[in-house]
Amino acid sequence: MSNLLSDRINSLPTSQTLAMAAKARELRAEGKDIIGLSLGEPDFNTPDFIKDAAIEAVNQNYNSYTPVDGYLELKEAICTKFKRDNNLDYKPNQIVVSTGAKQSIANVAQVLLNPGDEVILPTPYWVSYSAIATLCEAKFVEVQSTIENDFKITPDQLAAAITPKTKMIFFNSPNNPSGTIYSEEEYRALAEVLEKHPQIYVLSDEIYEHINYDAKPFSFGCIESMYDRTITVNGLAKAFAMTGWRIGYIGAPEWIAKACTKMQGQVTSGTNCIAQRAAITAVLAPVENIQYMVDEFRTRRDIIVGLLKDIDGFKVNIPTGAFYVFPDISSYFGKTIQGVTISNASDFALFLLEKANVATVTGEAFGFPNCIRISYAASEEQIREAISRIKTALG
Image (cartoon, rainbow, N blue to C red):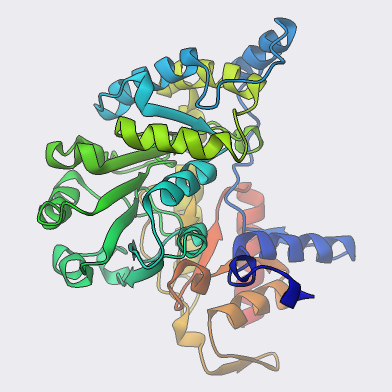
């Protein structure tokens, strides 16, 4: 019946991270002991002080439709957070609260992109960036990085990718899937290229900002020449273990924020009232309140990197943020293991699922076909067991 569906949906790929998670659930339902390292979801509970704020909102009878762009008190709290954590000056009329950072990104793309526009995506990139560009009938242009360069692109590469049709570039630091963090110096060098092209807007996805280990992230919008052309995206899912609460937000030039509010008003309208009231408490809380989660992620990073380096054929760098490792496994391409021929990263990820009972995600979904993404948002016991299974399966 696909011929009855729109070209729009037929051209849209399925999210590989969600597809792998669904496959893992199917295998568990069949009785298989699957360790899931595919989803980017913290395994912590939402902190009690945030849950208490939600309970208080319920007791205060917050149950009505919310303003499309979010409660004023939440937008004011987000402005305070932007200034405190990022040295970014935004006013409430520049803030739009959405049902998750994914909707925030989709809103921005929908209001800025026309059919035929080009969006530059430094690889590796989050799976939904390319799909969102496709939905807007825009063309995404990949700029390849290397593991040797810690998955960062250079100013020369960026300059070479720009054409008269380039309208946007998506930056993501700390990066999903690589864990890479761009330094202030590196971002400023890229900004020098963009300064020559005033038609290009920057979407800076900073959802993992608080999960950093060896380098503090720098907000692209802090570059004075780029402030009026940068949309800063953030949310509560990752650092606050609030994936299901679905709160994302942007700070942007007012005219873009108004356009996003207009778009959202015809799609979902305002975000959940209880989640918004809890979000006020979350964004205003001292960052130290969630440091225990970051410390645990650091410990897990060190463990999984060490274990993966001990497997022949895995090339691993050290991620400095988020909770993923993105090893290059291309040395296995063309080999046959346990009767399975591995031609690419998708074959490799499927092999690990079927032979090692470990769910990962192919790097092809992130525009980087030589790697797989492994999430270490899991217990230390699960991580050790999973990598042990992988090593045994590859034998």
